[in-house]
Image (cartoon, rainbow, N blue to C red; front, side):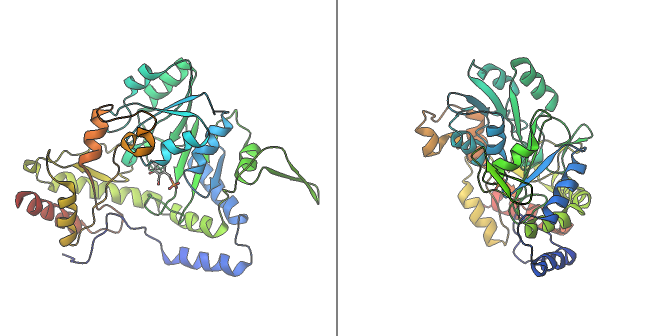
Length: 371
Ligand SMILES: Cc1ncc(COP(=O)(O)O)c(C=O)c1O
């Protein structure tokens, strides 16, 4: 059994991809070019042929989707407090109001019954998050969105490679946003992609991505909309292309490792396990909730002493200062608060050995029982 430090995640980049990056570097064309186009085409193929545009993050993708949907000041957007802060900050960035709804304690994703109850005349959209790669129930989500005529911006940052009853996440639905941050199941170093619905003009999406610029003829240029600077470089795109080749193998390996955690984790320790979903989830993360009253900081430190990295994804966002200033407080979302305070992310990445899972489970047993 290895005793090297085991991080909670680590990207797997093959030599072919490293060589492809070197080739781009030598080519003389580093920014958005043929490789970014090729990456978009490959992503589109993964998403059932839907239009996909690549960006330099999975944050700006969501902000762009909100802009494309004309959501701004005076509008409310419903989302979960249990996510990476980007999910809600994009709502504030377009001048709209985030409305948090508590999670379902079993899935740890937004509680769709709560979503329906939170709809007001000002509600324009829902941003659901597939936490840890476990998809939100798409059937119920779109039934609610359809009933109340709401847009959906799927924050599928963690769900690339996941599916909903056999259909890849991204191949159906309204806007779908992916992140290719290095912790994600496939990476571009940093980057993201936005899948577009049929009523949205992909060229407008492209203009919002790059300074609003529209070119025509040999030398024509116009700017008719305020755009940003969010294009993906060819250097990043070629990493994504190399990663895509391994998607199935990465997801399969993650599933095997997750299954092994279920087999080896000692249930008597009182940790709460994630839902055992081996149909839809891409097992982006394996998260357990520590037994009530167990000090998470001590747990992380004790695991580190044993050479094991533990992540925290995420503290409930509404308790951050920025959101307290909007009026949110303790007790507003008890499930998200409990999960946010007790969740730990165990090591899970494709290059992990089966014996690493045994090592993590043994360390957890030692740490929890020695308290
Ligand atoms: C749930 C969720 N939403 C949004 C993001 C933002 O993605 P990025 O870091 O690529 O901007 C991330 C990842 O970091 C995420 O995990």
